[in-house]
Image (cartoon, rainbow, N blue to C red):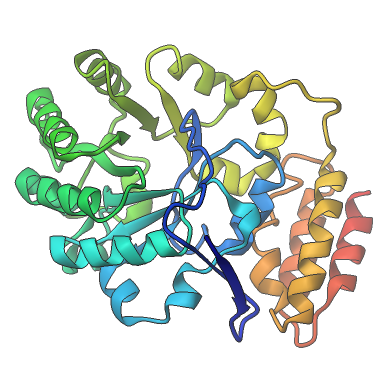
Length: 345
């Protein structure tokens, strides 16, 4: 077994592991969703400070980008981010097979296929939610992923597309992926409307169908079902966990990361010696920020992920405004954060 690390020009740690090296144990009881322009390595490092149990996901990376792009830049991550899943986008089984093998070499703990994103850009590449039109093709993709690696392979999908309102079609899609080797289904409990709605509207306007996801678990009791969509509190998570195996949250913990301060206690029944304050969480992040600044990473690339740390607190607006106005400045350094901290202390 071996592990090598190097640094990319942007200061990104690149990690590769040999086949057979021990991976993190994947527990999908609580997951943070893959989010474009949000789930980068800086965001993941910060969220990991709240919990060593939560399963994190990368942004979606296309199989073609893995094969032909700057792999170290796209796939490299900090070892502290484990357990970590990579989400792939694509519809060509052969490309996905090759991409999965490469991702496995980088040390990920799970490979997930995106069948839930409704954006026009993703549709134009023939992947994302539009793939739900072709369950057989998705099953071929899942089989390719499954044959490429011993890692768990999963799929994230919707309850249907457009005005489709047939549980049997939804369950048929899910069953086809299970038969092809999907070890967990992560279901965004809304339809994806492929025309007329933006990605943001697709997270809000199509009605939630939690009951469909609960029913899916009853129909496939031996398979892992994770529910996603519109979940905003840990108490809501606990209620969902009465019906399914796991929950996935996206925008809420990104916009209000302190939501996670007691997630290990509430969701995983893990005792906590003390509840960390927001300031304490900020201080835990400072060494990472200083390290990254020393490697040439602009402050704004990291600070944008902690804008919501003081959500709902007195002076939160002053915190957000100060960082928004100053973190992007040329040669901005850790002193910007020290000053912002004084505004909320």
